[in-house]
Image (cartoon, helix red, strand yellow):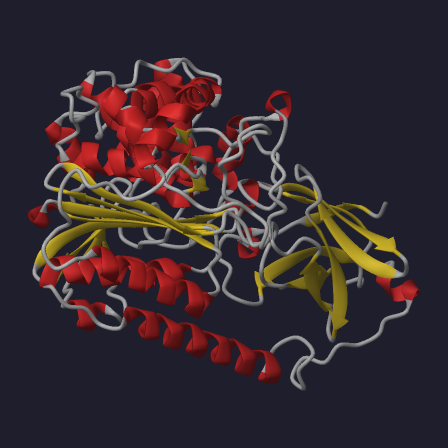
Length: 546
């Protein structure tokens, strides 16, 4: 049944794959096309010892129920072969949406970072770049806030999250309806504040992966999207995988939590600045082959070299140390580090290389145990990392040891504790609590805050009155706005209009006045824990009362 379906739909899917990214497609072997079209598990070889298909089915089912996940796709690679690829559930929250299969496209979020790191590795292989090159020597327009750090910043520093910038620094240029270009991002980079020590303090950062993508463009003469599509996705024959956002006409596409699932027209699709940090869309079939290629030392199964073994190993080498999570005692982990686009740690005495990704209401997870010659992929269309962690850690534990903790219950408990903590903080010190009661201000007082403000890196932000309410709106964003509610002492809370795409948490807005009492600017701070809405890095100053 599987192969009959594959042959009858081959022509349509091959045509779709050829045109999906606006780039040429290298010839894909028949085996790869068959895999791309098969919507269920693969029986080419057996699963690794300790893991069964029934165990995979069970943990996916439990996870879907525990975290209300509409759709999941799971893949396994073992001993150089793709041994499992299967879809579960629906493509969207809508009960009427189609079923997920092994060819369904998901947004893989920060698992795109490994594509950007690998793109740089191909340029290192070609002798066009060294990891130790100063970025400013290769890309003279590169500057950061500190002149010495600008000069000392190496290509490798773009990838390791220890620049000294804060957690999520610059994300407001990349997400929340942003219309920034990569050129805009480079122009704003010198105004990003440093909050930590260069090459000493780890803080996850998307911004510098965008710079890494711009560096790929600088050296190759192609856009990041073109280069990744041709040199990685097409070269490795990754089925149902693309470097660009899906467009109208592509039907086998998952829709993330909170998404309406409406795809843009091909002609209207534009390059987005954030793509090198989180813009790849891929099916579990495509991600399986990607993992297979990396675990094969950078070569495809038919012998095409994507990157050298030396550069594959450079991607998987630790470069920045991280603190251990609470779960480390359960996995017998003693260290955790970040390489070039990958996390790594000891896991029950084995090396584990992994990464997650969250974007567009979807979460992905890739986990590899090289000493077990095994890798796995988990893709979901639900904005909750607890679900992907439950599946990936259950499977990784079974592969490593033949047994597992009850990770579904563990992450359910973790989610519950986080919710209870947030609820307690909201009721005691949060907006509207006795410590910070909302107040009603007359329109005459609200007019003090109205005007145009300018932030050095984010640009213009306007405060205006709409229906006697104070509204904040950002430039270079299609609809990033929120209504402000007053607290005592020039403090407000911004509630964002589109919480699914802008910010899941409210933000404090603390206005400043000069000695005459005139409002001169403001600072912001996220109320919750959404680090990708880096309001804390803003300091807009008032430039006009109009």
